[in-house]
Image (cartoon, rainbow, N blue to C red):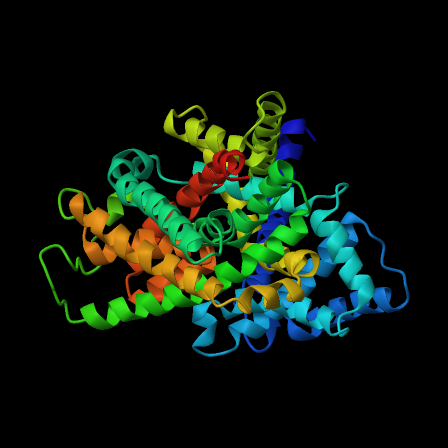
Length: 466
């Protein structure tokens, strides 16, 4: 038989094999893409999840849990997924950040009262912040690169000039106001700025508090863990207040009420040429080929290494800050092909969509100190300053937006509340409470770009205030 005949004879079988492979892959994707429910956790049937979790618990109980990368991933992913699932089952409260709050608070509370396995806690602490593994750097580098490179360029260039006014103005007014009032109350200008205003305006936990604590450690000394314990309470309290404000705005505008010209845009943020859809990004990636993911990971990692290299030769700014500047410059000047940007954005979608609960439980065990929290809340000036930060951000951002032909309510939500909520989950809760889902791209700008600017700002302020 000729080779040509052999080819013809084998082609149908090859095609059949390929079709079967594709069919199996599709079946697998469908199996694990099912939404969480009372019977499924992170896409797994609850029985299989329980088996995986039981193996981890058995290893911890028998002293067979190694402090290695694979064990660390297993522990934080399973613990985070369980708490995130529990929070997602509570009606109403799940829309107001309960899954995030449970991930941040529950492990620390259980550990404080001796109810959390010590072996698991040690493994999570080493994995999250250990110098040999550095899960935090892994997560933050992916988040910085993906959130900035995945941002629509038109949003940075066209809407950026206009949004920059309320964004930069709100940061400045909140920092100055809290600093002056904190000093007048005897709380301290430095403490009010660095430990109340900065974490609230810093873009949440993973993108704000975590890199901020490391900036503080490198520039002020001390341990990042103690700084995180001081910074987290402000973010949690502010997130609740911000969602409450969003609900109020929805309540006073749901019938289209206009208290003055330019007050309510009914979801439209700009009063002149420009629509929200002009600045919307691509749909958030939910999957990708192996090559796309590895390229996205590599670009994010190299970008972080470049930031670290610059920080090594130019002291004063943390590596995260330089990474942010590099990512912004690459995006603005179009220095990477769009396919590279899409790859990094896809990698970021994978990391943020699957590993955020894992990071939060790791932070809870590694950084959260209840003695520190009790000391903060025992001083009445602390919650007052947190409330003041949220109110000033909401009022000032709306006023500054109105001055540059933006709607007051929409700018207050997109900038003021986007800056003071808890980042990604906070953004979702805010737009849901305000009934303005179309503002999500703008809240992402506030959380990500605004949060990045706050990191840069604190890097510059520390030498002045310290």
